[in-house]
Amino acid sequence: MAKIVTFGEIMLRLKPEGYLRFFQNDKMEATFGGGEANVAVSLANFGMDTAFVTKLPDHDIGESAVRSLAYFGVDTSKISRGGDRVGIYYLETGASQRPSKVIYDRAGSSIASAGKGDFDWEDIFNGAEWFHFTGITPALGENVAELCEEACAEAKKQGLTVSCDLNFRKKLWSSEEACRVMGTLMRYVDVCIANEEDAEKVFGIKAEGTDVTGGKLNHDGYVSVARQLKERFGFKYVAVTLRTSISASDNKWAAMLSAENDTYFSKQYDVRIVDRVGGGDSFGAGLIYGLYSGMKDKDALEFAVAASCLKHSIEGDFNRVSVDEVKTLAEGDGSGRVQR
Image (cartoon, helix red, strand yellow):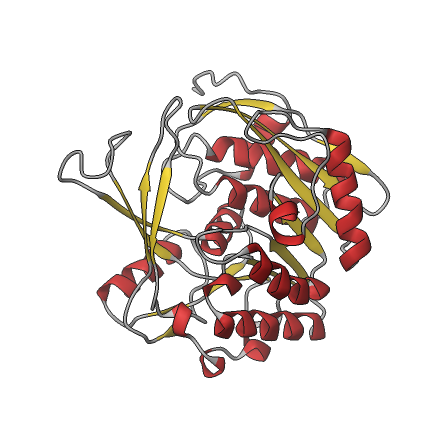
């Protein structure tokens, strides 16, 4: 089995061309994406032995989703087949002061109706070393939350490192529900990843002196957030992405990593956004790659932020970049000059 396993939902992504609004014309671009699937693709592009686990219907759309992963070399052999539908999300890409919009149509999807008999976690994790999931997956229903806990328990039993991106989605569940479920799952987690709002939305831990909508981020506040998360759950690492939103088109992008013995802040990038969906997933994948491959903590953080910075320039959920491209940016070449 693959060395790194991710578990979650892959969805059909439908969006208008370019910056058009919903049904401004009669065309939609159709691709696939989803938090843990995006991580798996990024890691496969980095040359990692990676598998994605989910449940998909046994029809042409389900098969197309599988093939979209296999194209990048992701191991799809443990995907369970059954159910009636692939979840869908609609994306309208924003620009300037008009924000992007996401509309979900995922109720009743195959993974949302999955049960205990669909996954043999002992077999899935045989030979694996790392397991990754996000807070989106347990939000799909109590049954899926139970599957996440079963996976986490077996992963720890087999000695895997477990990482989780909190990824709070208010359209899927309330803060109260998220706190209850994620609080249980966090006892299995070694590496916790969050954005500048997740810790507050899920666990009520707020970064003091920070105003996300006003573009004010207080570094000391996030050091305190990481410390409180570690004290509460015993994480080995806490990573927080730090996005300063100037507009839908322009962001400042950085991150923090609280490691065992020190806390690091990355360099900050000025990002002109082509597509920001999947930006957090590409950060998570970069961090997993850096830590798994033995980079120093600071270098792993810089690699993750650079990988995510590049993702903002790529259309679609998947981050189609190589290790060399990420390292070039992380090491200081952000000129964007033509490579000949």
